[in-house]
Structures are given as structure tokens and as C-alpha cells.
Image (spheres, rainbow, N blue to C red):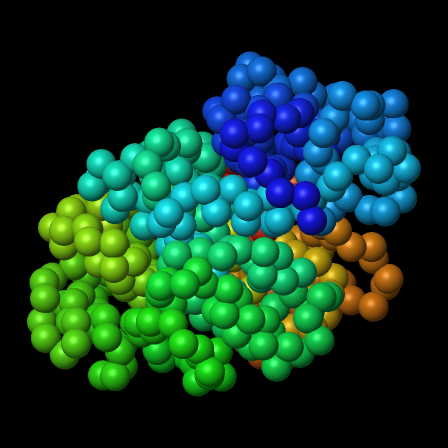
Length: 460
């Protein structure tokens, strides 16, 4: 495998440079003096910003883009083997790395790299840790899978030994990382278009846990069902967090305020440490904050600094994000939740804080996930008073006709839920405006482009 060297400023070409993770890696290399070029299928604000920083970017992916000036090519999982650029690069014998392989190699240049893994909560937990390290003036480099207001985007390039990033399990990409601190928030059934079953997923997380550098630390949810299987045979330092009495870092007496923000009493090794108040929403984020506290504690950050960093963090975009208020005091919230566990957590918060009834406009994400977890989706969405269903967002998949949002509508109605399949965003908007009442809350939910629905409503 090709090894990148920060002392050898080569020309790196990114296939799919406009992606939120790829663009961040490109920005890091630009800041380190590399020549960066690339391609994407569409012009975007991200592409424009990279061009302003000096990247040369082609719109459209054709074989003519690949030339002998390129020293290394980085590509995303979205690039198929029949892609013109991909074929041309292979034929030219240009070294190639996946996005995850490059990220893993970049991490190796930082003494204290923190990789946040888990089926749910990676972006919010990465945001929490980032706020702590910024509050402590540690000048971290940050790569996050969402837009974080405090850094004005999804990437921050610092000059310190601290690197904070998400570690995604899809296609086992995080197995390319060798962090100083690995965090595992939870392990759940997901990405079943790649993983065979839950046992396959648990094994994947176990392998990730073995990738720590010598002297590294694993921070892991001590309450989760698969804790023992993930940590079995490991010889690293293991720190547990959770609500259970056996966890090293423990949240006790968790309470939500009127906006859904948690507060709790923090215990470490059975001893009360301090009271913690968060600005993110939901009990699940009290759990995530414990992982952030543990990571900061391992690296010697003062607890008062940690608490202030946590208090200032209101999460990343699309995580129970308030978008605005319509007439009759109807609020619009947007959330990235696209797995049943995430959906249930978000809707529990909504039910706690909504002054009226909760409407969930849900856009399922990928056919494989919808089909595999259909009963679980119905169970989670049944927490909402009303469910308005959009068509499935295909992402990387093709529709084989075996599942649709109408199937989810049927499951929800069997459970007595007021659910209606409308498919088109404009039809959902009309239905909500006609049938909702004063003080009702609309949550646009999903990992696709469902956010556009709420924003269109607010434009009037």
C-alpha cells in the first residue's frame, strides 16, 4: 500500500472531492502544502470553497481528467469499478488509496488521535469532544461527518498533536485506523447491505478495538449487550462508561429540562465528581457525553474545562436542529436519524418537549436497510402521533421493487398509528399544513434530502 509522507508534498487527486469527508481530507493536505486536485459530479459550495483554497477540480468524471502529473489517487466507496476515472487510473498504474486508508495514514502523523465509532451518535460525540478540546485551547485537528458551527464547517486544521475524527464501520473502513484512543458508543444492526448479521457487526467492532496503537486506550459503552464479545482478548487499557454501577464513568439521576437538554451527576470509580449540564438533547446524549468526558480525562484536560466545553456544544447540524416556526406556533425540527434506535431516541425527546402533537415526516434511507429493519422502523416511528412517509432515498442502491414506503405505512397502520404514504415532498407539505394544529411539532427525519421539506415550508 502507498504511504503518504507529510515531508513529500506530492500531487493528490480526489475522486468525489465534494463529499463531506473527502473535502475535509483534501483541506488537510492543502494546509500541509500538498498539490490537490480532483473531480465531482456536481458543482457545490464545498467544491467552490476548495477551489478558493487552491484545489483544481473537474466537474464530471471522465478518463481525460487522469494524467501523468498525478502521484496518488484517493477515491470514495461511491466510486464504482466502471467509473471512467477509476479505469484510467488503474490502466495508468497510479497508486490508489481509499478515503479511509488516507484518513488512517493522516491520523498516524498525530500523537493523540481519537477515533469515535459506534452505530449511532458518532457525529454528536465527535462534536462534544471537539468543543472540549477547543475550550481547553488544545488547537485540535477535527474531521467530523456534519457541519459544526464552532469550526464553520466539517474540518478544522490545527497545529497540535490532537486529531479528532469519526470512525465509520461501513465496509470495515475504520479497520484502516490506528488511534491512540478508540471510542465505541454502541453496536447495533445496521448496514446489512454489507454486514451479514449482528455477529458479523460485533466481530467488526472487535477488530476495530484491536487496532489501537501500543499504549492506547479503548473507551467503550459498558452497558451494551455485546461489551464482553467486543473486548474479549484485548490487552489494552479499557475504560467503560454508562448508567450501570460497574461503569468507570457513570451518569446518575439524568433529567431533561423543558428543551430536552440533559443534566446528571457524574460518578467516576463509584465516587461523585460533579454535576454536568448539556446543550444537546436527549438521554442518549448524556451517555455520549460520558465517552467525551472519559477521552478528555485520559488526555489530562481539567474537569471544569470539560464541563464548559460540553455546555457550549449544541451538536452538529441535522441533530434535533430547530429550523424555525410556522404560523400557529408550529415548530419545525430536522434530524438525521435513519436507524430505528436513532429514530426512537429522537422521538422520545420530541414527545418530552412538544407543546402539541408530534408529526414525523420520514424519508427511509436505502432499500436494504428499510427491508431488513421494517418491523423495527414501525416500532420506533409509532412513538410519533402522526407519520408522513416520503419515498425511500436510494443513496448507493437501486430499487429492485421488493420494498417501498407503502410497506412501512402498512406496518404502522397495523399498530394503530396515524400514518400516510405521500411520497412527494410537496404533497407532505400540503398535508401537514392542512391537518396540523396550533403548537404542533414537525420533525423532518432521515439521512437523505428530507431537510429540504422543512426549509421549503418555512420559506412559505
